[in-house]
Length: 433
Image (tube, rainbow, N blue to C red):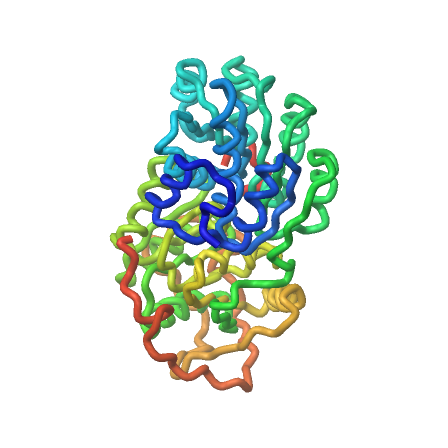
């Protein structure tokens, strides 16, 4: 089915073609006609499946008719996702007269006020906290809002935005269309959905326990104090393109980035303490192939769109199975192949077992031949002067659980292994990342 069969206006079809897309994905095929009809929609689909276009395109089609005013609002949890959605919307609307704007925290608010008070926008992509700041300064009004999107709503709730979302919902017109999209739809979202949507149609293309089929997963048992050494060995022994390494804390991300740099790897760090320009530069360097590794907190598990991520490595096991699904979803996007490795210390075994129960299957355990798993805790590396966090490199030299499964045989070079590196928060968040 081509995009032309979905009932989109000609200027938007031209924008879609210019963006390089010809055939809609399953979530787009099902969601776009429903949204064009004006019904409320709850959409669940795998990460990388085209959710953004699934709601942006029909909203733009609606905004083409009517007056020039702020009539469409998209709420997202992070700056990175806000920038991604805004860029996509601008691309699709390039052959129209619609204005698309973005507002998020961590940068000066005055340029965003000038944008909204000047020529104005038809569609605004915003994080909840900054949107409320702008409303409190009387720089944005909501009386003309016709359609609201809660993108990655589960993440917004998880980051502590539920009170902000409830405030925004009270400020918006009661007569509106509301759309909720996310890669996972856990039970705690039911309350938010009940407040925001009316007679919603549910599109479920991502069962809660499903991950992308093209991702090969493996767990590497190792003592906590040997994680950096093991990671270095994995990076040296495996053919990789662009890699995202996930850690739990901001200090842990900076510390690991320094350690990997001293071992000769090209690294950038991404977390909530970095300035917006630093965060943008880190993503740009990864996309352009200037660095191979991005060491990041869960801020990068959603809302970043970098092609050709061949590997995701969980240096720290995530707190929840849902976070695991989102992390590894950064690879294997758009039907590509990818690998997801998790370094598991003994005290993280229960977290991995919870992930396996969530997935409904076990994940193979792997050991690297000739690696000294019984090495004692060594003297800290020089210049590593930052205090250790609870999820850092410190810990007892526990012996890892041995696996009876032999290491998997090397796979032939293909989309997952033979590729070249890719040429690539909002301050109100209650959860530190």
